[in-house]
Length: 345
Ligand code: GTQ
Image (cartoon, rainbow, N blue to C red; front, side):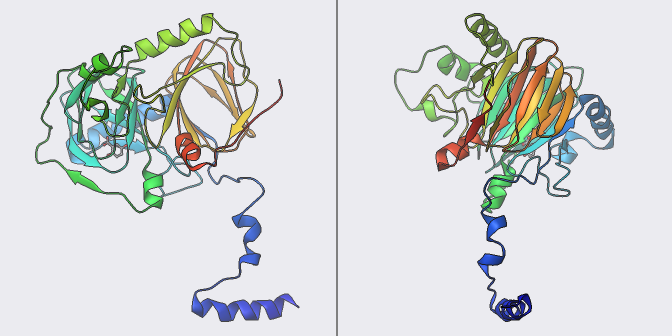
């Protein structure tokens, strides 16, 4: 049958809101994923002056959240960094408050700059320092502030595109700028982050499905990686990588975003690996380059990189590197479609 005759048939389908699968099947269910997002690197040297400029345009309170979104070039106007992940760079100036609110998307923070920023999450406050990884669970009240005398800057990671897909984004403002504080600072880390656990009660779920350790201090993560690296040859694909875990069940620290940190010694290089999850990488320390598919980017501290799914990726470290990652891997695993391939060494 000629394409013309077929087309005439298709035209008669469309008034009924129907369409023939066979015309689109190979794109709909391809032999392997074809991510729409592109690999991209945001240089902190470019981001920082623009972010500080935004600080003169409006206050954190006016903005509610003063953030420059790291928007993937393949998704103009869509406020997403990969297909499923949102990343942005948030600024709080001395004395400012980002007022309390809560929302169904989960958020994580990875601190880039500043020593006196704090966030309050679900009734507990924590100071945030460079390299710390902090969790804001879905529907937990959170407000941020800065009690120092310099800017506080961090990377925000949210699952907004995932919840957008499910049309399940809700948010609510608090009546007060700052939420009430119910526990002393450090309570969650003390109870859950020392290889100890409360002997009784249900506090383990104070942050819902998230790890009750809501701030993983960089100092400890870094030391763990340095010590672990002493006792092993680095894995060819992963170097020395430890994931942030929920001590209650040993799983990922958050229900919708996986997080981990990789340490690569200067002069080393990883062998290409690819996996279905898309990710965002932030440089805590070190310099080197990252290759993602056909693209290679040089990085220095505080740079952020978008890594689309199913692209061969490898890292070349010119100095000792500590690299933070978040990804949608936990969702792929839970739903049963996570896949990974490693190139032979
Ligand atoms: O800090 O609560 O980058 O609500 C985007 C939305 C940060 C936050 C973002 C948010 C926040």
